[in-house]
Structures are given as structure tokens and as C-alpha cells.
Image (cartoon, rainbow, N blue to C red):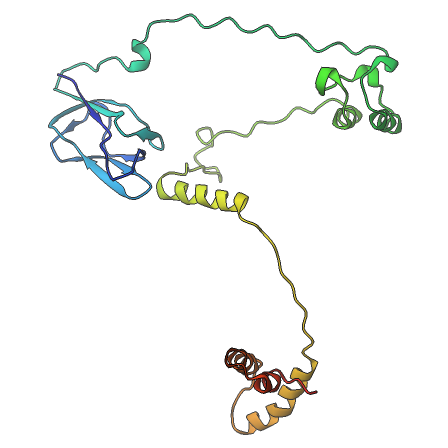
Length: 258
């Protein structure tokens, strides 16, 4: 008898999980507690074992698909048992709704009747474009500057469609790998941060002439003692002096001479 196994509640507050990898395929025999699928949630990635011993009749989710908690993941059965019809095929055949009638955009008329702003007409004159022969993409067939520029470039060239990952030859240099699991989650978070986070650059200019002179003056003494004097000690001394409120030490550390 067929038995549906639904995605369990893996953790508190978890409402869905992403199928990362199937360890079985339809028709495979499984034993109880054998791992059948790896599922990733917002909190953890776990391997779900088989609850029964039997045969895999159906896999109701693909790798990379997000499944809600309580939805069927896999259907188990006994050897020789046929797979039950999927929910999609079990639905009655409902005729598709009639397509909505759409009105074709108005055909372009004479130049004087074309809907276009003065700036668009001026651009068409500069590019030597006949507005009456251009079909507008704006509201009510209004011509835009993009329409004029496209018409000036001539008819669109035929584009070559790049082959998909399945169509790439075995010896080809291109290989497309779907983003699944943790990498997909990282990609989503990084994309969100790129859109929502404020990106800015702060630049501040400081006159370090006197500090350079001070370092050059002390560098000879440091070299005689075998010490390589850089600018970092001055910065550290300035920061420490600023923290303790020693204004004189700040001026000394920064090499500022009144």
C-alpha cells in the first residue's frame, strides 16, 4: 500500500526546506533508517532517513526545490506496486480560459498626427528618421527617444542563442552548475545586502609634511640602533594620547610643531 512521507517539522519556527540532494531515485528499494534526502532550512542542513522499508514509488520534489513543511516529499510502496497518479495529473481536465482580446496599437499616421514630444521630433530630425514609419512603444502609441534611436540603427540583427548547459559539448570549456544549498543561501543574502546596504566612500586629507620631516630626523638615530622606524609608531602614540586626553603627546606623536 502506497504511503506518503511529508516533510517533517525539522526545527522550531521552520516553515519550509530546500531539497539539496536525493540519495535515492524512483524504483529503488530502501530500508528503514536509510538516508533518502538532504534538506536545508534557515537553521540547519539534515539528512532525513526512510521511515519504512519498501520501494521508492515517487519523488515529489526536485533538487533545489523549496518544499513547505507538511507537503509530500516521497511516496513509498511495496515491491511490484504501481506508483499512484501525481496530484497534477489527477485533477480534472478544465478547459483553459479564452485568451483576452487585446487591441493592436494604432497604426502610425502622417508625420503631423504622430504622438511625439518636441524633443523626440527634434531628435528624429537630427537622425533623419521618418516618424510615420516608427511604431511607438509609449502610452497610446506615443513615440519615445528610444524608439527613434532604434529606428536610426536600422532593423535588429539576428541574435545567436547561446546553448544551454545540456547542449554544451562534452569537450567544451563552459559548464553551468546550479546554485543549491548553502551557496544559494549565501548568494541570496549577498544580493540583498548589495541592494539594501548603503555604499559610500569617505575620503579625508591630512597634511603630513611635518610628520615626514620628524620621521626623517629620527630615522638616523633609529638606524644606528638597528631599528626600522616607520610611521606606525607615530599613529599609535597619537591614538593613545587622544584616548587619555594628552594634547601635548598628540602633537608630539603627529609631529606637529606650532
